[in-house]
Image (cartoon, rainbow over all chains, first blue to last red; front, side, top):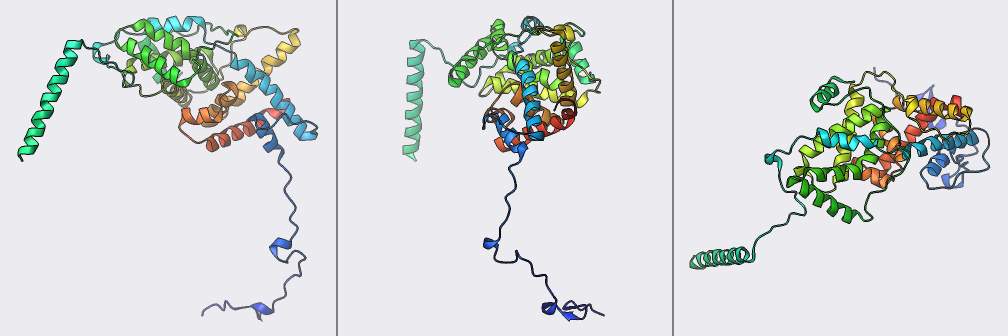
Length: 140
Length: 213
């Protein structure tokens, strides 16, 4: 037997009683309370440098700001650390002599050095090659 | 220490258990314009590839500080940070001919991957900064004790974060990088990184607030 999906409790769906809710008017007319600005959002924006340090906060918010101020002092100190002076020489001492097979010119900043005579010879050669190609194409 | 790292250390002649110093002075060696920097780096790379091995030390000195801070922030151990830096620069030296674009971004990725590999492989025994290595500029012992405690607690809390959150927090707060710079180095979006940093802050606060907030 198939279920009757159109009636419940012996009543047709439209005849069921609905609660008369005060906020059941058009959505645009309802008063929707705004969510309070989350404290964590304010703190995050302060820590990201988007807002000045929050002041006049109380309770958890004030404790949160104080907490991050203390962490900030520690991270600022760590930002001043530099490499121990011996490390550079230690790394240099550990470098193997460069294998000639790895001596590849970098892709950027590669300079080609040649004498003026070589440059002229290369230009003449390229021109002659170009003429040959042109002739071959015109014959066809 | 992981088997991989141990094996690599054996081949590169690294030693363990030495004292590592902290040096609280800031070096600023990065040229003003990034284009100048790119060209300057390319010139040095070309010289090294021509056989001038000593020119490589200029690249080490130019970029080791931010890389060291990254490795130290990620591993929490000066010794491990030094070893990762050494291995990374040796790797960079071997593959110098493959550099395309910015050397600093390229070598950062080598170091960042080295840190992640170490974190993946390490069987965690909490490693903390060596007490003797810290600069002592505090007026009274209580103040210094408080700071040492905070430093150790922050290390422990950072060690509990997933590597991606830890990396984002360290880059933002310890290295002081902008989100744009982080996005460039990690090849991801500013939005994703903001989310990671915010989640890292939430997690750290949850771990530490009972004691410090």
